[in-house]
Image (cartoon, rainbow, N blue to C red; front, side):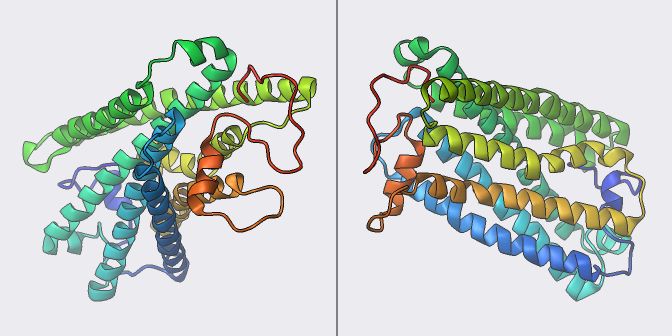
Length: 335
């Protein structure tokens, strides 16, 4: 989470190792693995952005996926930049980012690092809220298929994405105003703002996303038992993305929230944080892989273009492939 820069008692000052010591072997390995994962994820999300940006007609979920890819790309870029910046600082000075030596001798580097962390938090918030919106809308399309097909606003996806980006920016601006160094505010005020926003994100977006995904999975399971029909690829892609986020990325939000109460040995803290960073990078980099795995042709055939595979993964209706048996009824539940 974002921290004040002018107090040695803030949790941020204990985020890295003590002054004069360098990162251990474990943290170096985790940092290298995280950077490698970020590079792969940046390439994958960049490919998704390019493929979806040049499509003339985009469905509602394509709009969500496009914005989610942008948020994941921003998150991975900021995370990789943070790790590279800290690794360079340790290699050149032997001190970590929040050591007393860095605070006094390299304040510009520290401020740049804080900007990256704020951008990281922005991208994380947007990604979490977008996954919540995706799972909620897919759940509504299953529970209320007639409303979804006939009365859903045409530009709802674009409006929701714009509102979620605006909300995330507003949260970061308010947080920056309360935690700016030159305001000379009590660190307790910054702590209160950080804590409120952390609980808001974890207590609002995450439960809604988990609940809607659970309802969707139960409804689809019942539909499969009655009709013996496989769920659409879009459902599989959404559910897989949500499960990966809850498993790999949610610990980062919990860690940010609980950072104020963590009272561990400094080396234990930094190993924990680097492990969580690696896990969150896996989550942001896994989404493009999920889309292309889900969208690939089930039956053997000639190699397809990536755009075709992505389109198949994000389409709302089931697609008949060679060897599939046409259904005698319409899947009214949209799964």
